[in-house]
Image 1 (tube, rainbow, N blue to C red):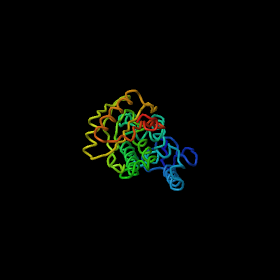
Image 2 (cartoon, rainbow, N blue to C red):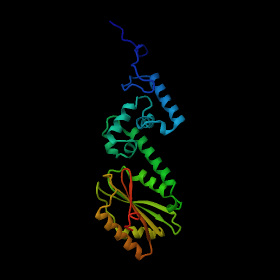
Image 3 (cartoon, rainbow, N blue to C red):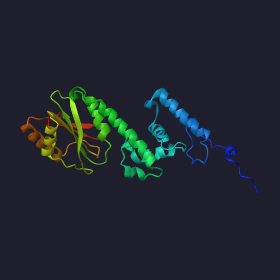
Length: 253
């Protein structure tokens, strides 16, 4: 009977110096070419940061923690094919992630951990700071939190008399093209927090932040109710995929 070669005797497939081959790994010890590939990615990241990494390699590094011994490059590329870019993968709904072959609890946990960390970091740059003097940081936060959602969300930033952000709250979740908003509930919450001003924010999953007539009418209704109680609506921002729309800048507030 012909002796079957051991794993150590089996020839390794050819691959480029910076990439591990996209082949299933045999059982046993992690092959050296995978270890070396991961080490090269880490070294490149430490030397050049995220700018030195394409999306699929950055995502691959995130996935390392989900599976310590498998080649994660094929899964990283599959996720990017499905969700378009790095941010799209991180913010994808759990149900859609699970539909991708190879995605389980460990992968979802790692992706959602990175998403939560990014949102916390962006939020920390605006919370308890004068919002109107850090407007770019505020817009960055809005995009991080909302631009890749596949359903509409409505959130409110509550400000004190010095226009310092005192609370950021998600008020409602809706469908792909509608979110229910109740002006009296908005104002009621502002009074509970002793806020003096508000910034309204919602997203358009279509990617186009242009306001609908319903958006315009809803904004005016909130402004009317708020004005009766001395509350100021600084702006209503609609977040799209790559840009935002400001009611204040366009003269609608």
